[in-house]
Amino acid sequence: MEVMEDMLSKAFSMIDDGRILELAEELIEIPSVTGEELKVARHAGEILEASGLPAEFRGSGERPIVLSNINPEGSPYIVFNGHLDTVPVPDPWAWSGNPFKPWVENGRLYGRGSSDMKASCAVIIHVLEVLERLNPPCSVGIQLVPDEERGGVQGTKLLLEEMRRGQLRKPDYVVIGEKSNLKIRIAERGLFQFHIRFRGRATHTAYARVEGINAIAKASKAVLALEKGIDRFHPWIGYPVISVNTIRGGEVLNQVPAECTIGVDRRLIIGETAETVMAEVEMALREAGRGDPDWGWEILAERDEKGGYIYDPPNYTDPENELVKAFQSAVRLALGVEPELFVEWAGVTDGRFYRYSGIPTVGFGPRGEHAHGPDEFVYLDSLKAQARVYIAAVLGLAEKTREIP
Ligand SMILES: [Zn+2]
Image (cartoon, rainbow, N blue to C red; front, side, top):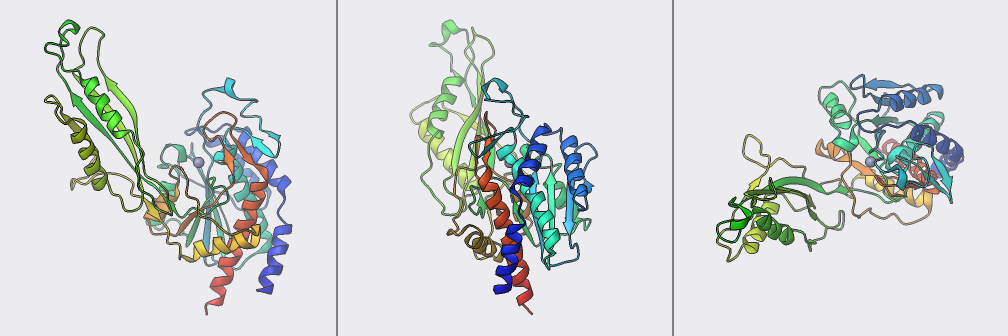
């Protein structure tokens, strides 16, 4: 334990906030909206090489994945994953400054991608720089990926396919650096998206009350029935969410609409499946149309060859897993506070791909705000805290494995 403490204080003293800020600013200055990650990926590779770390590129030539490793033969193998793509800036006028000229104010770093998640990628790179000098008895890798904001097919998902084919070493543990307010994220909601189509009867507006059946009016009843909070909670993951996010109906102004389709985005918590969700939706629709002789609807959902719904189930890593335990003690050692689980209104991360493959995965990242919006920022002190926790977790996992003969 004393050895560990000595090593930790040495490691903590090697963390350089100035370096983290410099790296974060460099990454933010290179715009990298999903699909246009080439420049920022190349730059990340150059940063690594300039620090004497290996840089390897995978994936497509236009949208590379940047990999680096220390002690590639060591065990356990711990991987830090972050995405270099960002959402666009559709509203530069709403920003207080240039989103691609990062600025610091009141201990916050502002810029597109500061919170989601280039500053965290900067921490990941710097942690590898520090660990390389410490040379811990384990292997540490980093993955800086494209395409996260549009589903990860060209990024993390591609790496998992390479692992399945034996072209890439499978990590024992994965850490996702997405913002988590320095809390430990062990679970993520699932994702089930589907459409509901309502049919009416078209006619001239003049006959709307005579022979028309307005499909938009029918869909509206369903929207009101579905747009509700769901009274169900899971301590690792929070509440489920349902949101009607699209609506299409009607062709021209002088005709009663014959058809209207709504699009539903449903986020699932542990215990829910596509089937249980669908049963609830059907019940709500039947209730909404009670007493309406013209009430009819059809669910449009993607299905596989066997007829099952295609969706992303909720996923989690057991809180008893040694990775979770390592992060809990790392938070105690590095931040001097009791670790908390991150149970918030958060979206999905690439961590789900690892969990679906059975690899223990936690999310741990900085505190930031306004991701995807104007004046996105990250708190600078949380970046240093993130680096401390990462290093303590790696050393803890390395130590633990050594103890087991
Ligand atoms: Zn993100």
